[in-house]
Image (tube, rainbow, N blue to C red; front, side):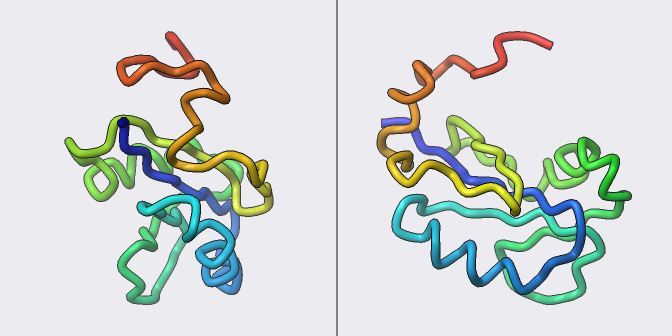
Length: 109
């Protein structure tokens, strides 16, 4: 079975959402990261990024060294103000998106 990391992207530093989203997704995903602009706390799964919220595409490049792991097969990116369909979890996301272990939802850029 492929291992997935849920990566939650914040366009503003809404740190109160971190605990709420961890509770919502902890039973569905074992590996959860939060990419939070200008985060100053010390929670291990929260990665500070330094970019304007309108340019959040740079967050992924900035956090790459922290989220990159050979044990992760897929990275599932969502926004902090989006609620993922409750039926989707780390065990069935591949079925929902027709992904094999070596595939990606966006086949090319």
